[in-house]
Each structure stands twice: as structure tokens, then as C-alpha cells.
Length: 337
Ligand code: UT7
Image (cartoon, rainbow, N blue to C red):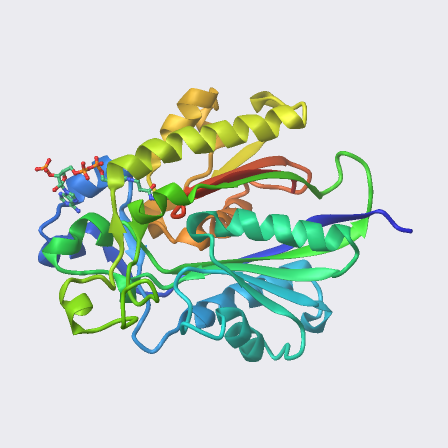
């Protein structure tokens, strides 16, 4: 029986055209470019038009990834869609994406691991490929946050942080090759529901009494994200560093062996701290938060596409991924791109 390995055969990304700078937000949000840049590194974010759904962004990113992988779209035999902002409560956004791509019939998973969604999805795709179940998996992370933000001064602590966007990768199978050939190496995944309410959207939901949502909940703004920023920040730094250290150690790798790190993009200061703790030279970390804000499940594949375009990521490079987010969920991956 063949010994299957998975690798990233194509990458694509898409953000809505309209960009909103920190200066644009100053006009309505009682915030300042200085505060946002100093605390987060964000300069601008893209927000979608009203008639655009999350799966529309995912279609564009997927088409670029399919072209990059140089496969026919009908070679895709599974979709994994990571998002916390699906088109509708159900069915999953993966079904809407599948229909828009004209890939009806293949399985479509939605996964809900928020900012760690891409890494969870990558580990799923890797496992499916290794068992020989699928040959080309479309793994997408996409979000439209803008429609779920409290864009009044009261919501400024959360609303300045998030952007809309999508990143897609094709995870393909091949027979095991040499250590320096492209292949996904390993993953480390975690969750701790004790912190579920440190970063969450309470409503709609079945834990809210008789109604999933009602006017009182809307008046209390329970349909918008709540975040205990400092707690999240502290745990993000600790958990991303821990997980990355574990993944490197379990593969007998050091920081020197790794060519590029792609971290989740929640705050430039989080990534700088992780770099400092781990002793990672700044030039080995590729950040995009300046341009896109936090696009949750999309940050890592979006960064991957931009790193390729910028000439910072090439075939054969050893790449470390790490993310942390709501749940809390966190994890890391190591791959030969
Ligand atoms: O992707 C999922 C994971 N998410 C994260 O990892 C985010 C983690 N947390 C963070 O990145 C940071 O905690 C934030 C960027 C969210 C906040 O930075 P902070 O340094 O922790 O600020 P803070 O929340 O402690 O607020 C400091 C001050 C407060 O004013 P006072 O009480 O000191 O007078 C806030 O009211 O900054 C004020 N503030 C703002 N001022 C201008 C909060 N938001 C804003 C704003 N503009 N947008």
C-alpha cells in the first residue's frame, strides 16, 4: 500500500476592495491612528460591501489557489471551510462555497476553531490525505467580520481590530518523498473551554434561555463580539510559544532550521513577544496585520499567499505556523512548503 504524504500544492487569497484606514475610523469611533498602531500594529483593514457573503470571498481565494495548484477544479475531492462568520447559521458555509464553485457532490466540512481554524483544518486535511481518503482538499479560511462589529464608540475596543478576508490552500497527496521535498510534517492542537467566554459572541444561541435571540439581547448588544483583551493577549503569547516549542522539539528542529514563521495576526505585539521568547530573528516572521487587521481563520493562508508574492516563501522552505484564538484554541504546525 502506498505511503501517502500531504503537501500544499496551491495558495490563494482575497480581500474586499474597500480599505478603511485608522484615520477613517477616527471619524466615528472615538479612537486614533496612534492608539491603534501603537497597541496593535494595524494601519488599515478591508471591509466587504453589504451584498457580499463570506463564501463569496472564499470563492475568489479558492479560484486563485486552484490555478496556483495547476489542477482542474474537479480534481478537488473535499472542502474544509474554517470560519466563525458563516453566510448563515446553517447549512455550513462550505456548502455555499461548494455550490458557487460548481463542485456539487463532494463532502464539505465547516469547522469552528476561530483564529486557530486554519491550523485545525490543516491537521484534518493532512490526516485525510495520509489515510488515502482524499487526494486534493480545498482548505479555506474566510471571514466577514465587518457585519458583526459594534461600530459605535462603545465597541471601539473590538471593532478596530478585525478585517474581512479569505485565504485558501489546496492540500494534495503524493507518495512519500525525501525530507527536503514539500510535505506537511506535524501539528500540535489544543483547546481550553474554561476560557470560552473571554472572547465570544453570546447571541444568537441556545444557551440564552427561551429565545436564541430577542430584542433584549439586541439592546444589550449580545450579538457583537466581547473580548477580555488583556487575558487573551497574555494567554496568546504563552500558548503560541509553548506550542511552537513543542512542535519544533518533537521534530528535532531549532529556530535556526526554520526559514519562515507565519503566525496568526491578532496583534503585532503578540507576535513580537512570541519572537522574543523563542529567540526568532524578526526577519523570519512574516506579518500582514498592518494591511488587513485580524481576519481570524484567514490570517495564515492570506499571509502565505502574500509571502509567496513578496518572494519571502519558496518551495522547499521549512515553515512554522502558530495560532491562538477564541475557545481558547491554539496550536502550531511544521511543514516543508
Ligand atoms: O484573534 C483572537 C485573539 N485576539 C487577541 O489575541 C487580542 C488580544 N488582545 C489585544 O491585542 C489587546 O489587549 C488589545 C489591542 C485588544 C487592547 O490593548 P491593551 O493594551 O490591552 O488595551 P486595554 O484594553 O487595556 O485598554 C487600554 C486603554 C483603555 O483606556 P483606559 O481605561 O486606560 O483609560 C481603553 O478604554 O485604551 C482604551 N481603548 C481605546 N482607545 C482608543 C480601548 N480601545 C481603544 C480604541 N481606541 N480602539
